[in-house]
Image (cartoon, rainbow, N blue to C red; front, side):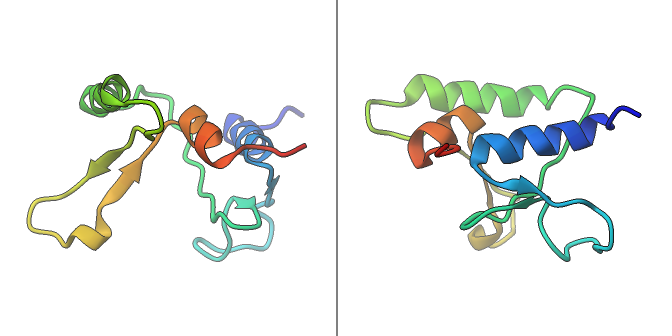
Length: 104
């Protein structure tokens, strides 16, 4: 029986980051991350629909504005909320280049 797409995605992300996928068996929501890793707590979300256009545009804008030695990020902030709960988005390839992927 073939794995569900979300399981395949979790395995692929785990491999790229140098971690190992944690099977869902016996765990509860928020109990452990999707990927066991030395210094990352990785939660992988698979979705069939494209990411929102505004988010893709924001990433493209950050990438276009980056200079040598800079990591392009997008910070998502909800009006009226504290900035310490803002979300930082970065493309996986940029994350891997900046922090390193699978060392194997």
